[in-house]
Figure 1 (cartoon, rainbow, N blue to C red):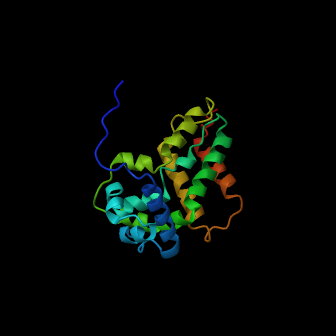
Figure 2 (tube, rainbow, N blue to C red):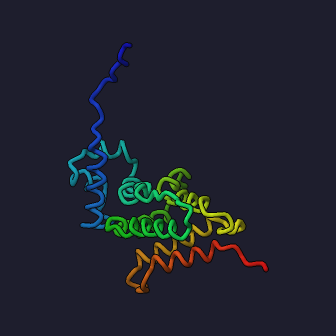
Figure 3 (spheres, rainbow, N blue to C red):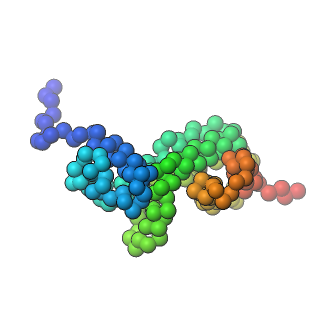
Length: 196
């Protein structure tokens, strides 16, 4: 069998992505959101700015991927034990938002989203959201434990608000057992109403 023809040019350097993403995270922590520019990342990582622009069209997209990379470590396999799965999911979600680079980037990313007149494609939001994983956990729950009339997107939005408050504004809320309290709140929202 003949080998496929080799494409012209050098093979793509796979280390460029990780060097640029690592430099972005370091700059966010060391210098802050506003100082984390494509040029600063290029200088800090040793990656040419044009190579960064080929991979990320803007600094916002670079920062989003560096700080919330599809929340891939958040992939929590549902077991069917709803309280346990929620506990694991919330712990992973809080850890993702608690990372130093994520904390440094969050306010700037929120401000950018509010000021932007450009609508973002829905697939981008799915890429940086843990909503699909949350829905998988609800689908795996035993029958009768989740009220079918409850909109899972509404519950996820409330969960996201709790996670953001408890990670980004943790100094304002010094309650103990934040994960357990969040699990209890979400279970109450999901529980079917007793209509007896």
